[in-house]
Image (cartoon, rainbow, N blue to C red; front, side, top):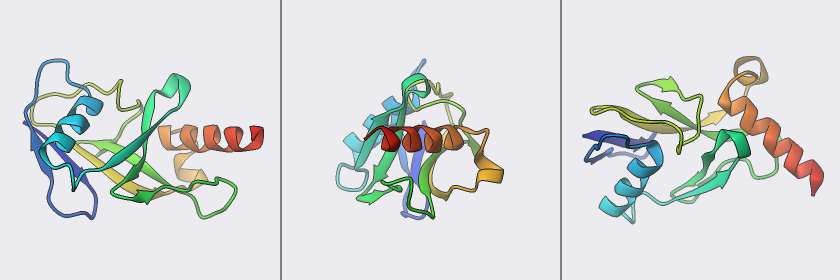
Length: 127
């Protein structure tokens, strides 16, 4: 079993684990288990893969030039992931958590969250 949860939203969702399962597949199973309580949106971030941008109608910062910046961050077993949901392979009994995190440059500059922030700034400057 793999546990998938959204920090602060209540009950975690347990899904059956399978060899080679990634976080995206676990999310799809969580949605199939509880479609009204696990709604999400994804965005493709090039080399970083797919990252979550919304859970249950709570969007992260949409315009990255308006601070403060809040982004959905992926944690596996309490540690921030360095890969997108499609490249993060899970083991049986892993706990996947998504948390709406305040972006702090001194803490997140060299993390996946920092890369997400830079890509959003870049894409907004291209618009």
